Length: 406
Image (cartoon, rainbow, N blue to C red; front, side):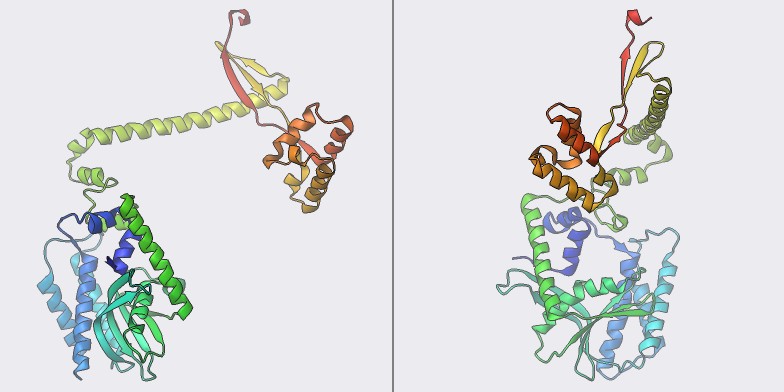
């Protein structure tokens, strides 16, 4: 039985192939640390330490909080931390963390709005009564207000602020609410709180019992989808901005050649067979697009030329082109979108037993019937009241000139 986590589910949603590499094949690779993840971990650790001391009636000064962050940054930093954004340096991220923690301290000091119950609280979430579908996770901070309301806090160092609609549908903390509801018997209500440290902003949301039950079912369906994909070995890749942070970038079929070319010298890059083929492919594709546009313009000109001269065939030096445009009858209501007109037409053909013969999508049979001979002259004449004649799309056919044409 597999115990899932929010991050594991999120990996599948972001890229099923990454999920396969990490959780199914368990490919042994050197996991990289992104500077964003490094920054988030250091901020989390310093806040956790501060709240642990608060549990023992020891409140840090802001300088002590920032000094702890500085120490952790210097102690944990290593050369393998990668930075995707080339316009930023390690010091820029370091300073972001300092400001984020400073702003947080100023916003919540003296930290008496709630009482911390647990830090990094492990939570197990049972999604069904049988226990077949389970998740686990860790709550950054669990607290309780003076009124007895529980709060689940999550600290983010993301640089993208979300809408309230996003927070009201967010899965992770809502799943944690299900978990703590089974752990504590005195819960009156639960509030979900996200602290976006970089923005010095917070977001709040709550869930009803019905919403939590719906979330359980939705999560179970996602797990079933994952397990079905595992059984069938059906994992596709999804390209997105997240690819730059993926540990499997160098083996992914969508990125492997990109990765190889990134390490080439300019000469190697220019001589690479794949690079040359793609360059030529784009040249041909662009040329074909230009030729197609030119062909369509010539066809329009030919059609107008034929109308002006009242001809259907135009000759060239070695070939001739036949231009044929046959008008067709269309039901009037399809152009006017008039329900009354449509109902009148349908009533007419039903009364005369023509519904099955004429009533199909686009009314192609209507055109054939009016132009044909199967209808009586009086019915055909009556049908003309319900239709209009639309100029047909011209068709072009080229053929080589015969000797007799010269």
